[in-house]
Amino acid sequence: MKYLNIKKALAAWQNLQPLSEKDRERLSRRFTVDFNYNSNHIEGNTLTYGQTEILLLFGKVIGEADVRDVQEMTASNVGLRMMREEAAMKGMPLTQNFIWTLHKTLLREDYTVYRNLPGGIQTSYVIHAGQYKTRPNSVITRYGDRFEYASPEETPGLMGDLVDWYNAAEQEGKLSPVELAALFHYRYIRIHPFEDGNGRIARLMVNFILTRHDYPMIVVRSRKKVSIWKLCIRRILK
Image 1 (cartoon, rainbow, N blue to C red):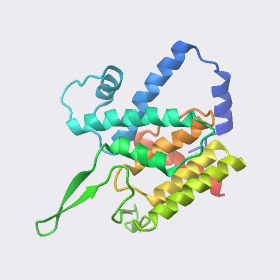
Image 2: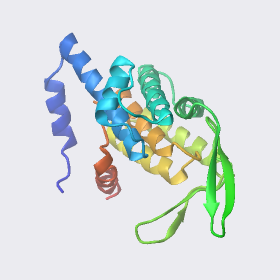
Image 3: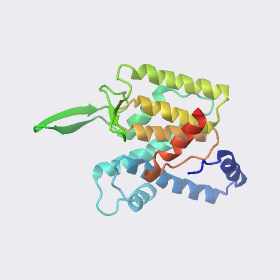
């Protein structure tokens, strides 16, 4: 897979500016649907693209739809608008409070997850909206190993370090917006600070960084969710 020539792509985008008001509105509508559909589809949301489009553009639900999925998609769109408004305030530093607020917006409220363990035993735990995790989380890699994310005790300090690093790196100006976004994403995901919603927050934060620096926002397609950032990270760390 060829590495995307970001500077060339950015130049092509800039050559299209300024867009007409009509084209800006059309592009904004299309991005709104594409981003929300793909970001939530990655996490298992069952709304179709058509249902997402009608919901976000006209506020209507067509066909059979899970109530929680509808609420999740609507909240996602509110989070997207919130992110764009925050990014427009370019003189303001990034804060943990903004990330907490964004997470609270996406999840809306605390909720309980129930799990069935071997032997018929049922366990449960609470997902906290707008609050860092209170229990360990991990993932099974494609090689079958378990990767442990940062512990609940480490998370506040690591997130403080991440935000401080971003603000300092942005001021220093040595990294391009794409490098900033890719490295922020990489460090954030290794922390996995929340019990749920980490992927959705990470994708919003990538676009927060890009749009803050007048780069076009991106949609990570559900079928290609890892490839683009693997390429960016490999390029940066060489």
